[in-house]
Image 1 (cartoon, rainbow, N blue to C red):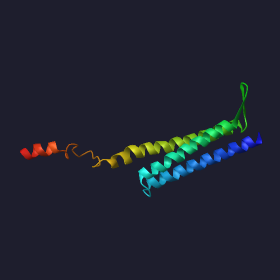
Image 2: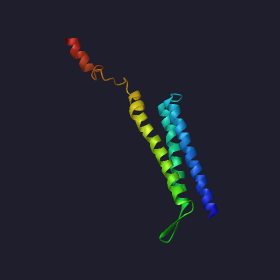
Image 3: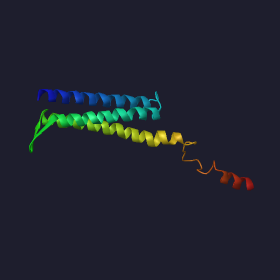
Image 4: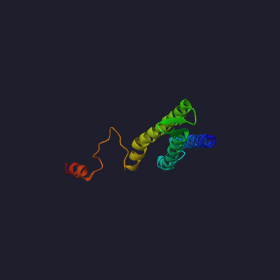
Length: 133
């Protein structure tokens, strides 16, 4: 029982360390010390690792005996730590969804979208019609 509790705490510490590392990568991309694409490629494996260790923590902190569930780590502490890690993880994921939609995708287009620009300005059809006049 004591070894299981120790292993659960170690898994949670690794989970939080991975969340912090993912946050640092996200901050570096936000401050443009690294590109968003490279930051996203670094973020995904770190985030997956964080999720795995949180799953290990949740599995190790509960012990099922028949129909009863006994908490190795206190129930309130288990739920609080799990909720904290989940919220941090979801916030980081939301940042990368925002970054992907508004920073990575427009950077891949030949011309950045501008609300005042004509979407057909660079096409050959518009040039042919305008040149004919």
